[in-house]
Structures are given as structure tokens and as C-alpha cells.
Length: 113
Image (tube, rainbow, N blue to C red):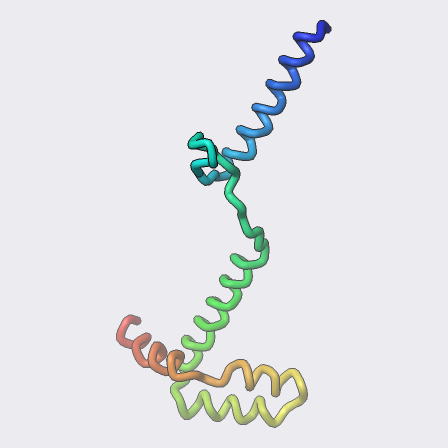
């Protein structure tokens, strides 16, 4: 390869790499000389955010469904029985304790179903 071909190949590779980075999103800015520049956008990579949100939503849905189907008295009876058990049961009872939002949504569920 001649020197010109190598320079062209290196420049072509740099441009392809830059386009690949910009394809993921970019921010347009005006630099000090007044030239418009495109910079790759900074992304916060949180791979556990979506699965964690799905897990929390599923857990809240289960809690709402249990409370609406069993009723408040029966649900509290089950929680009291869980709180008498071992460590895992006590943790479950603490997690399943209804909050005001859960109670309000659980009252609306029978009307929807």
C-alpha cells in the first residue's frame, strides 16, 4: 500500500468509528470558534433498572390482587400468621404489609374486574 492509501484507510476507519459512536445518540454544541460539533451523548448504563422495575411492579400487583381478593380482615389474619413464623415468614409479612396506596388501589380492583 502506498502512503496515501494508508492515510485514506486510517481516516476512513476513524470516520466509521465516529459514526458508530454517534449512532447511539449525540448532542449538538457550538464550540468556541462558532463551529457546530456533534458529540456522543453520555449514557448511564444501568442494566438492572428495567428488570428491577418489572420485579417491583409485579410484587406490588400481587400485593394489590391478594388484598382485593381476600379482603382486609382475611389479609391481616394471614399477615399475623406470617409474623408468628420463622425469619423468612417475618420478612414476608413485613414486605406484604399494605400501605395506603395499595389499599386504595385494592378497593378499585373489584370495580374493574
